[in-house]
Length: 364
Image 1: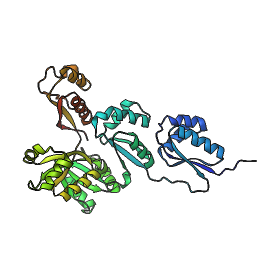
Image 2 (image 1 turned 180 degrees about the vertical axis):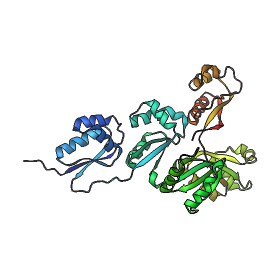
Image 3 (image 1 turned 60 degrees about the horizontal axis):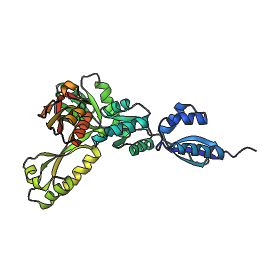
Image 4 (image 1 turned 90 degrees about the vertical axis):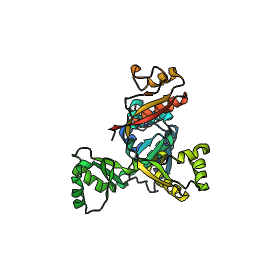
């Protein structure tokens, strides 16, 4: 008598499994590996439909051991649909964790650590795309970094073009009937809050022009600048000390030197939330988009020269690093992620270091 085929096996999430699990699953259930990979990255997905209980239990047991989150349901229950595809970018807020995040990402993507680092150094660092939201939530849980998950077709975009190409403005206003505003951003014009369709139309029309950039605003990072405060307002002063972390003993000196940076890198959502919070307190702040650039490393104090040189050899040639405890500037701009990691490492040995922006090397 035939077994009752009334079971459906659904992969709910990749969980803690690695891409290498696809090889084992392909062999165990005689399914092409490329199909298994697609199922893993587009969860919830149906592995088996209308199978007997024995196969369903075997599949669930096997997949659970590999770290996948799986459920078995009655085949009469409607199957999950997953029409939206997402992508994710990564921001490492604590640079000392860079090696750990590189290892975690390489394991998730099933690639070499060198390749994972290169992905993180892209601008923006979109680490994976065209996958389900569940997959990216699993990624977020496995990385010691901030993961921004977006649906590209529902996001808003900004387009940047050089001021010297201002003739584009009249053309754009004519084509799009003044449906958006154009403003200056340094040496560029920028059009913000464009939907996916409009941004793609503009990009296709002008992509041959030099230095035209299109940016998904969900991936932009912002700094928050404090420009004004009521110095006699006790509540505002306490807020800066307790919530922002400005030492009470230097607060007056800090306030004499406004504007000052309160946050160096927040996502768009974090920025909007933070500005609203500060406005409610009475602080006058604004945000500025961070344009990724390469940076020089500036060392102002060296406590242990030997240890300092040992760290710097990971980023510079032997003949480029300091030979004494005097102030030192690298004069060799490198990617901001690497330089932030260098500063974090140097801090652990008591060496004072900071970044100096190299304005001539815009990485976008």
